[in-house]
Structure formats: structure tokens, C-alpha cells
Image (tube, rainbow, N blue to C red; front, side, top):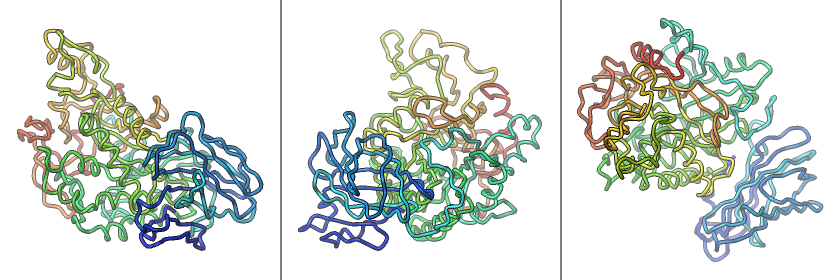
Length: 571
């Protein structure tokens, strides 16, 4: 369990608790800035005679060109193998030194490594770590934390949870798909389970709750590995830049979010009964990026996003969720990273990584609570644009000057996701961090799909004639006309990508085309109205939305049929 470091504000000396977690600050200053370094030591997986651990060092003092971390075990733990560090042991004393490629540790920078070890008896977190001789603050956790001690039959924690695993097929979505003409062709595909309000945890309106899904997942698992995909989605003031998916919690209800939403989910995920499942959490889509792009002084600012930026409850909520949900060693958290048509511009890109890192180190969370990031969740951005690249030019003009690209540095999701992963590593996330891309509705096939580049008349004709993403504007997001099913879910499809996934279940609406009274906290967003002429976030273009759509999350048969018709690869 990643623990809050509030005690640092008052502590002036090393304090060791019964849990084995130690806190230290430099004497003379009780502020966080006085902590010269922080070590996150997390036991990721543990069995009768052995364990694996992940360690992240954060350097808060002067920049280093090399580093050496030392600790001693209280028991008989032995390091048997390691990665991303040169690890040696003499008796109970362990030294981990940098490799040639990760010796640079700037002020505020982090480095991560891992190892496998053996033990018998207890496996307590070491009480003290020193970085180049200086005592660090310790934030440790894993199976040695207080909480359920029965490990059940856990699988080994892995770098990519999708590798070698089946993925859970939601029987409720599957039944809806199979009931559609032709739907049986895809009704066996895995999709995300959306926990989009408190009532969804226990189930409401006849729908399965979280435990029911996990119990069904155990049945589907058999003797192999199985991933269950959950969408954690109920922040206070949710979706501050949209209305169709506004949530049930007001902007100030952070305590309710923690105690009535995250804590019950965390308790269920920590049940040893489910220890053999690989549980992937997609954490709070459309939240943190809005704190970068939709706040004053941006033209796209909204009053709601300004409020959430000011009160900090997005950051607190995501940090708390990562901390609590990441306690279970079989849980893998992926934080939402928008999509290329939202965050691909220079003033959005690295700033979003910084914003996510702030949340990933808030409320007791650490960067090791983040398995990776997910892009294009519930969106339509093309996976690959085959007919032009960002480096092309027409008559001396770069494609970046076209109205469609509009100076973006990315033209599709794959290039954006791979670049986002690298930027996250550059900013201190572990080198093994992975990416997911939601390909549920970004296929753009069918008869209208371009077969080659556009004419070289001018840069706009070239891009518009060849682009397969047929939206009117890349900022359009609600029930887009002409979309198709994208790449089927697949593990390890490209460098740095853990999986293509269908987190948004195809056939479930993004929002109602007109105002619909409801008890789900969902408002009416004009971007879902096919007659709407737009706003600054889509450069005042038509919305491109399908007509006659129901509330977000409700079944939309006409859209499902269109998605199958325009699937790419074709069904």
C-alpha cells in the first residue's frame, strides 16, 4: 500500500512503524522540500519462498550522474536476480547501483529497477534506505502491508498483463451485441466494464455489479490467465468540459468519492478470491487532460474546469484511486492520456504528462502505482493514417499547416501513444511503462474509406483526400457518423503498446441527441446534437453526431449497425 506522507510535515527524524514503513526528513526543515530523496519499495508478488519487488528512487537534491542505493533486511531475504540496476548483497546488506544507461538522476527525477528474491518467515519492508549515503523517505508496500493476508492463488505480476492472457467478455454487452442482426460476429469480443456511478458497484437496474463480473470472470478464466477490464469513472465534477457524461458527484464531494466509491471497489479487488485474475483499471478518462487544455486562459476554458483546477479534486481523486486500487498485487492501473487530436500540440503534450505525474504522486500514490496509460478511450481517432505522414509537404507547405492537422505533431493514435510513453519515461515514469489504445470505434472502413493519398493540388486537398478519419473535425467526439469497429483486441501489437482494447463497448451511446430527463446525473451536450454548429473545442464546426441517440451508456442499435458496416479490418 502506498502510504500518505503527511507525517513528513511534522517529522524531523526517522520514524519506523510496526508495518515496516519508515519516514525520514532532513533535520531543520519540516517541509517536503527538505526530503533529499524518496524510495518507493513495493513487493509486487509474493509466494511461500520468494517474491518480486519494484523500487523507484526520486532524487530531490542536486542532480546526479550516477547513484547507489543501499538497504539492509531484517530477515533472511536474498536477492536472486535483478533488472535495471547492478545489485549485490553481503549478508543482509544490499547495494543497487545504476546501469550505464540510467545513471543520470536530475533534481526531481526518478529511476526504477526491480528484482526477484527468496525468503522464509517474514518479508518486511526494509526500514531505511540511503542514496549515496543520505537517508531517504520510504514509501513501501505490497503483500507485506496490513490487510487481507490470504494470497489465494495469485499469478505472478507481469510487465504486460495482456500477454498470454484471455480477456473477460462482459455477458451483458455480449447479449446486446448477439441480439443485433450480424452481431454474433463480434459478440465474443472483450469490452470494458464501466463503474460510472456508486450504484454500479453493487449493480443497479438489473445489471451485474462488480462482484458478479469478477465471479463470472473466474468461470471464464479456466486454468489460464484472464484480464478483467474496469473503467474507474466517477470523479467529483466529472467531465468538466462536457455535459453528456457529467457524473453524480459535485465538485466538492471528494470525501464521498473516496469513501463511497473508491474504498468499496478497492475492498472487492483485494478479496483473495480474485487474486488469480489480472485486473486492469482504466482510471478516470477525460479528467486530468482537461486541467491542461480547458482552463483559463485557454479559449477552450470552461468554468467547471477552472473550478476543478482550483480545488484540486481531480488530482486528489486520481491519486487516491491509484494508491488504493494499486494495493492489490494483481491490479494494473492505466491512467487516461486523452488522444492525439486533443493533446498532440506542443503546449498540451508534455504538460499533460506533468499533470498526470502530479496526480500519480498525490494522496499517497507513487509512479509505481501506474502500470501505463490509455489513449483514445471512447474516442474515434484513427489508429494509423496510411496515406500521409506528419513529414509530408505539398508545394512547400507541411501537412501540419493543413486545416485538419492544424500544427499538431501527430496524425494518428499509434504515433501519439508511442511518443506519449517515451515522454512519460523522460519525466520519470518507469522504463517499462506501457500503453493501451482503445480501437473499439476507430476503424473508418466501408465504401467511403480512401484508397490512397489525396491530390497534390494543395495541402488541404492532399490531407482531406487521403485521411481515413472522416470526422468533420478531430475535436468531434459524440456518436460520430461513418465510424467503424477498429482493430480487434490484441496483446503486444506494436512497440511500447501493451494491447489494443475495446474499453468503450461498441453500441453504447456517447450521449443523447436531445435532452432526456434521467436519474443518472447525465446532462445534455450539444456536441451530441447533429444540428449543433460547434464551439472553440471543435473550431466551430458541425458536431458530426448521429441522430436519435439515447443517453450515454445506453444501447444505440443504429450506431452498432453502422460500426459493423464500416469495420476495418472488415468483419
